[in-house]
Length: 159
Picture (tube, rainbow, N blue to C red):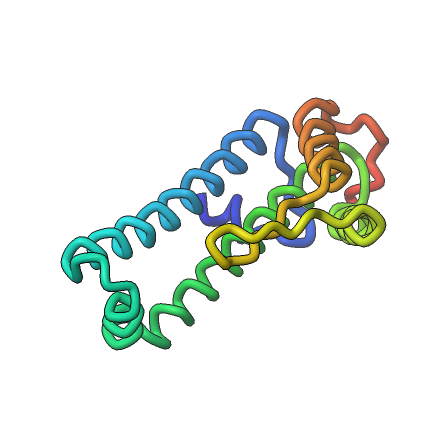
């Protein structure tokens, strides 16, 4: 499993069904960790009787910088694993993996710049909502990775 997620960076290939499985695994892990963090915060809120300032101070003292660094490294590892399986899937389709992924990232950045999301304020906290164009592009790319058969574009991915 670790080899599929983190190994074979330059020449690995991944068929459609394993790609779907690993993409779902990464999503489940990410949501599980986020759920754990929210559960930790909610337990702390119950213990502190809803005093928000005291909760922030307690979490900062108990978890602090090591926890934040762990979360950043963990999320970067998940992002790399997600990009690695996408590059492997692109390579299996017959295209150049990382180059095509970089081109898709640039296109996504352009779409996100041309069609920015909306900023809404909820209880004094700004929340950014992605644009419909950006979400549509992500969905189209995911469906292409999931539905285009292996070697549809020849063997260019082996170079």
